[in-house]
Amino acid sequence: VERAARCEDDTYMLAVAEDETGVTGLATNTRNGPPRVDLMSVTEKGSGAAWGLMAEGIAWADKDGAFDAGPCAARNLAPLRFLEHCGFFMHQPRYIFHRWLDEPAATP
Image (cartoon, rainbow, N blue to C red; front, side, top):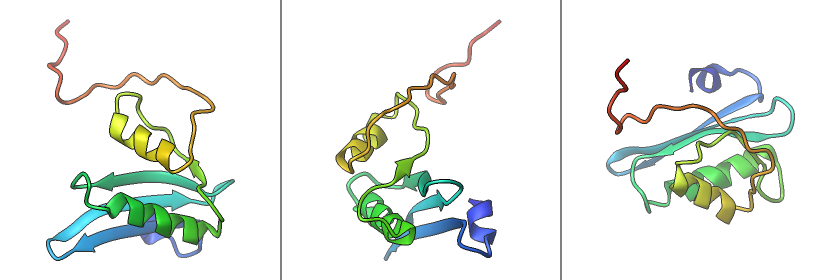
């Protein structure tokens, strides 16, 4: 997020979604290679923030449709469904070990 916020050329973009309550989401996109969604996060499911952030990213990338998406953890079903609905598909699965904070810590 800091890299996109401090970018002085058009390599990275930081988009922030807001409503009357304040910030409702943010996205970072990059042009290192093909334009790509780097990070997207929203505070409330169904708020429309993700759609707005995606539309802003597509306009920034100057594309007619969706562009590449960064990695997404397989357990993140809501983002995976959203990306699929936007026209993305998984073309190279990668398994990354990840500790979810809602799981108890393993003991040695």
